[in-house]
Structures are given as C-alpha cells and as structure tokens.
Length: 154
Figure 1: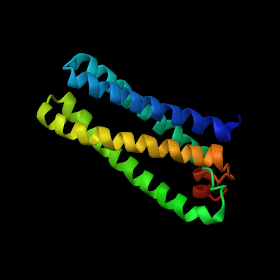
Figure 2: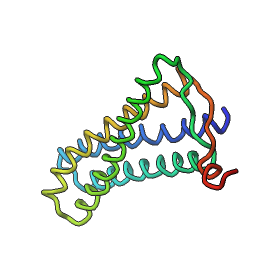
Figure 3: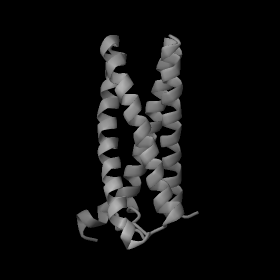
C-alpha cells in the first residue's frame, strides 16, 4: 500500500470506528448509563476528529483521488459525493452542537439534537465508506494535485 491508499484506508477506518462508538453510546444513553455514554461519545468524537485531521492533511499535502470508473457513472458518483459532503458538513456542525450541549448539561436540548445528529452521522459514515469503496476498491483512479501546490502555484 502506498501513501495514496494508506491514508484513505486509515481515515475511513476512523469514521467506521466513530459510527460504531456513536451506536454504542446511543445504546448506553437509552440504558441510562450516562457516565459510560459520555466516555464513549467523547471517544466517538475523537475518532471523527482524527479522521478529519488525516483527511485534511492528505488533501493539503498529497491531493485527492480522481474518479477512475466509467465516464457513464461519473455524474452519479459526483452527485453522491456532493450529497456526502453536504451531509458530513451538517453532521460536523450538529455534532459539535450536540457535544457542547451535553458538556454544558443542557440535557433536554442535548437529547433532541443527539437523536438527529446520530442518524445524520450514521448516514455520513455509510456514504463516506461507500465513497472509499468506489474510489479505492472498485474504480481506483488517478491523483489530483495537493491543495498546497495549487495555492502556491507549484
């Protein structure tokens, strides 16, 4: 495995771990095991943050992977990718809000936000993993220029 595939594999693993931890945390909240819920959800947020750091670093320093599949599927892939990006952005904002409400002990709002945030996060993890499968397993593509190169004209 080279740098073009190892970083996406690791970052996708962190998204999957994050989603699993959120599912476990949700179950713990239902069981009213609130200290365990807090620890597991914090770990889930940490896993999501690690994903973001790896993903951002790769985009800035290495570049992204271009679509390698058939041209006939590219519009569908791009629409799916756009859906995933919007979903991930919403999930990040909702996640930060939900965590903040929990840590501030605004528990009624935390519960309301948490239900929605968890569902959005599960869909984000599923669509993100699907993007990984499409780009690295089914249709490996080429690589784009690192953002840092584009910014400085290298």
